[in-house]
Structures are given as structure tokens and as C-alpha cells.
Length: 132
Image 1 (cartoon, rainbow, N blue to C red):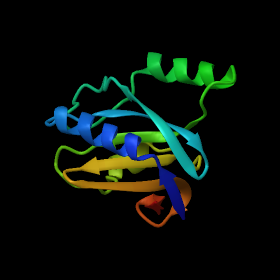
Image 2: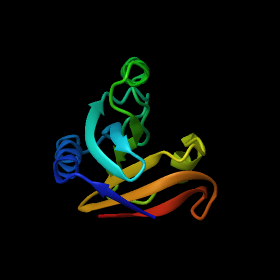
Image 3: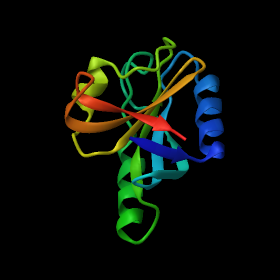
């Protein structure tokens, strides 16, 4: 599997993740099934943001309403791992619905992409995606 991600999206996600060092930054990805054109940073409302992330539901529901009204399509989610490991954790797998959405993870200088699927090759939930 491959996905094209705009250079400005990659730069923006990395920049926000670096500024948020020590906590997991997170947000939404917008585009089609094979291309990510834009992103949005969203507040991490988890009680332990240094170890987990939870998208602010107000921002998520606003994006879903906008999508239904003809706005940008939510293609997935992104978050950072302050530990520097860009691999999805078991917690990530437990949180991910097998809906085919893209998950981009920033860990240090690494950035990886994954598709959330049923019976994925990693933790039974994620299949790797090559970024173009």
C-alpha cells in the first residue's frame, strides 16, 4: 500500500510534534484514499497526554459535520510518540477502529503510516503504508 502525503502536511505535523515534545500531539488528516492534502492539529484531551492521546471530541465532531456538509474528507489521524518510536503501540491498536483510516505516527525523526484494518499484520490492527 502507498499514499501520497503533501510535503506541507509532513512539515507541519513534524513541526507541531517537535514543539509539543513531552506530550503526544495529535490531529486529523484530510484527503482521499490515496492522497493526504491537509491536516489539522487537535487538542489532546487525554488525562495522561505524555503517554496517550485522545482527540478533542468537539474538534472531531466539527470536522465530521463539515465533511457531511461537503467539506474535506477525514482520511485519518496523526499523533506523535514522545518516546521517539514511530511504531503503533498496543494502545494505538486497541483505540483504532478497523475502518481503513490512515494513522500517521511521528517519533523523533521518523514518520510512519499505517492503515487500520481488521486482522492487520501489526498488533492485529495495522498494515504498513509506504509514504510517497
